[in-house]
Image 1 (cartoon, rainbow, N blue to C red):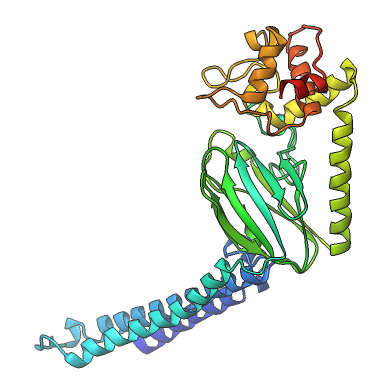
Image 2 (cartoon, helix red, strand yellow; image 1 turned 180 degrees about the vertical axis):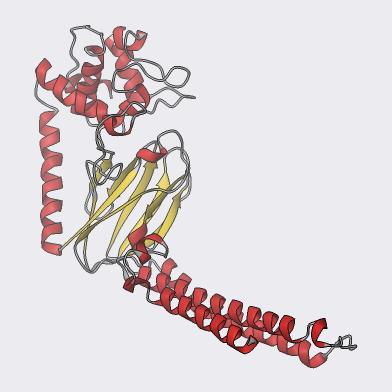
Length: 379
């Protein structure tokens, strides 16, 4: 009878192991109960290592519990078992030291080779610097002179406490400027932070890397087919932690080259826009977009702020006071507070637009305008 119980137990454990090894055959298994396989060769190696170690652990547990159950059933007092009288056995000591040692070596070898592959950033085809800000990412393409911020675009009426709008499919995982990379290229990432500790994490790449102020960590990836991959900051970096998504778009080399050309064209257009005189209507329309992308998390959509945490803009001394003071606060921030310096983050047009918007919204009716040329002069 005991033999049948033991056989069924072992069969059940073996079935569980097979199920884990073929998780993709079960609908939703790999997405809900198991490690994600990812979209890169290195992520597949990490997944295979995970499955190997899990398999070894299951086999070891099955063997230990099988021996334990057998010993309890066979050598129990009711069957007249008499305890052994020996105190030590050199043979047993050698066996139960050697077997775990061999198991650990069997686990260490593939783990070490995978770790070394993860850390090998040599011979990269291109390098992108990733800088974390509260709460957005900045991407600098060091080989192409391209630089931009990537900011959450999920509307505030979907995520604020009093939100009533229906949540989108990619809730809190949409940005205005995704990071774009070519396929079949080894891409090196240099990851750091401008303020607090963040963590750059795209699950499909198979790794995450901390962004630490004053330090540069590196990592790499290589994607073999076009696609969109989403992630987020994986470090509790402050109140806006949930609003710091990552969107990575992989393109063919031809499409990537077209994107590079588009980015350079947009940079030239932005420079040209900074030289013209804008109307109040255009400044307000653009300023609202800039405010929603950069300011609403703290000052709120109604400009009332969060009492005790972030000051209101409605009726504030800054937004209704001298224009020079307002420009200085937005461009240089305020030390010791959460108010960032947006001068290095926004171009002249966006700064002029958002300041104009703040001075003429939320009940503030100053009627004045800030032009891009005013920002350029203040710089």
